[in-house]
Figure 1 (cartoon, rainbow, N blue to C red):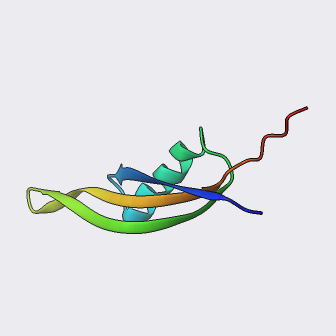
Figure 2: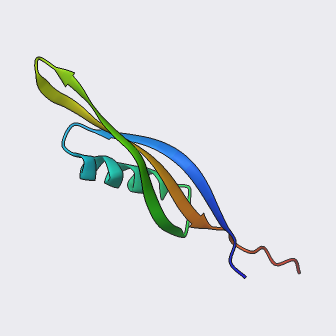
Length: 71
């Protein structure tokens, strides 16, 4: 049986939306194992001097719950 958990994470980048998503995966994988998918819920940018200064992504990260076996 597979049980999954979903967490919401905000990520950003000065390069692109794709880089912002990769930052989410890179940082989340430091403490979360078995990441299965990332659902992009919302995207936005901040603007400075009529130029995009930051890409922001609100994502839901889905990962498997590991079974713990008692001995």
